[in-house]
Image 1 (cartoon, helix red, strand yellow):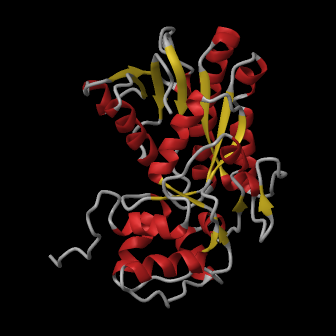
Image 2: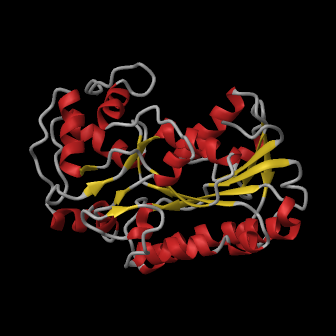
Image 3: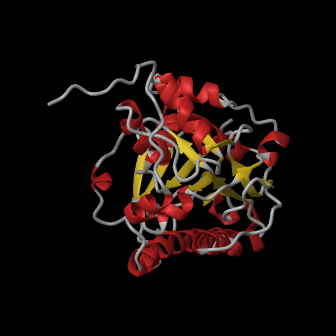
Length: 320
């Protein structure tokens, strides 16, 4: 589904999800206004159907007309959780890159009042923390730890818009499966080479969603009446050992080389805690809103991944 009329404003359009979302909208003839930070090369590029608009969330700068005529605002901005080791400085960047832009958009939408376009706001399953085998619908309590605190503050930054009567959707995103990026994108080269396997003890629940379904869910939610938190996950959460084995089996590779938790912590720092957390999300809101997944089960997702999502079979690149 797509907003019936008007432009979709997208912040954070340069990432894995944003790139695919913009392409999907443009392919369907939906005009896109892309919010771009100063100095970005994107300001000089005018792709068909996409208009770049400069903003500077760190300085609180957003052109007054940036949201004019918008049917929805989709905010996907934020430095990637796993892009670097977690130091005190990188944790501060993770916070500022999320809270500054979210707060700025929320305040501008609040200024426009209840007739403002909906805010479809990125969030994350880190809200729930490490919860073992516990099923986690959107009504589940907040978890503990740095990520849970970060996500809770990120969602709270939308409060000005919500309090002003603006419809706010919080996208509590699970692991996004894509051949070109995301958590699994980093594992695929190892799995193709027969060097991958379960992470930690392998029993952690990994909730997941394929990249096409994530984009379809954003577009669905932009035009529905849903508000509040939404678990962006398939209805088929699996343990991490099952997921890695399924992908390796489809690639005709073994997946027996377990990566122990201490090695992950050494390599990834604090981010290892997120990878090793167990979160069994229940996508109750999407189900109730009649969303239909293209890849509802792990077998569907693996078939798509192994075909690279574009009908091209993944293969180990030739040497040299």
